[in-house]
Each structure stands twice: as C-alpha cells, then as structure tokens.
Length: 173
Image (cartoon, rainbow, N blue to C red; front, side, top):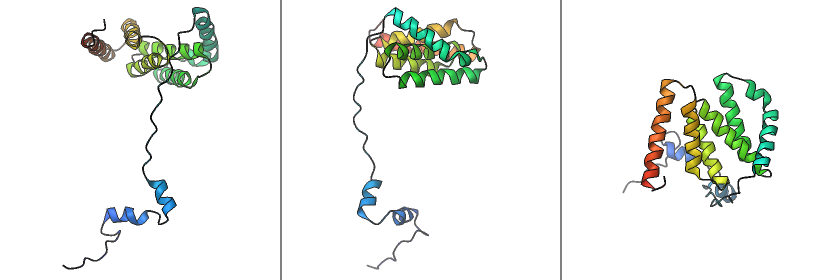
C-alpha cells in the first residue's frame, strides 16, 4: 500500500470545507445540524361573534385606510401580504386576527392572487374552528366574481376543479 499525501483545500473541495471547520469541540458542536422541535398544534379558537367582527373590521379599515386606497397590483399585493402577516402575528385579539386573515383571503382572491388567498384560508382553518375547505371555497367564489385576466380565470377554474376532486375523494361535499 502506498501512502497518499494528505489532501489539501487546493485539490479537494470537501477537504476545504473540513479545513474551514473550527478545531475546538464547543464550536464544532454548534455547527452540527439543529433538529427543529416538534411543532405543537395551535389551539383553534371559536369564531368571534358578529359584533366583535364588525368592530374589528371597522378598526382594520381605519388602520389600513391608506393601503386600501392604493389600486396598483403590486400595492394591493403588499396590502394582502401585510394583512396576512399581521393576522398571523396577532395573538391577543381573536376578532382582529380573524378579520385580518379574512380580508387577506378576500382581497387576494379579488385580485387573482390565489396563492395568497389560499394561504389566508388555510390560516383561518388552522387558527379558528371553521372548515378549511369552506374557507378555500369562499376564496374561490370571491375570485370567480372578480374581473380577472383569462390566465387568472383559468387558474381559479383549475384550483376549483382540484379542490372539488379532493372533496369527492375525502367524501366531504
């Protein structure tokens, strides 16, 4: 057996990565991959009563008044992203959280941004005692009434068919 010369970073990219690793034990432990903790399911809340939802809706329309006034597609998309993010971040006011997520779903659907609309619908289903399939259906229904481009309409139709097939497979219709 002939002894091979030690590998160097110049001729072995893997060795280069090894050479860059810290030599002390505490630093190498910190570099080990982190296993993410098991996500605890979120406790679903009851949908707040109509009066609380109406109050939250009024408050949101005032807080986001300037954003709602903007009409350019990229501005509306920014509004829906903010509504979704704020809805996900709201923990101490269920009515406001519900309305933020609902608004994100509905405004996204009206603009044909079905990815955002369905994320908001799923978030409603994860956080509140509502039927997630119904939340998706409401997003699709809202989009079907909107004035959309032919491509956006085709996307809405394809999503509607896919969700209908899922509902049939799950015997949930």
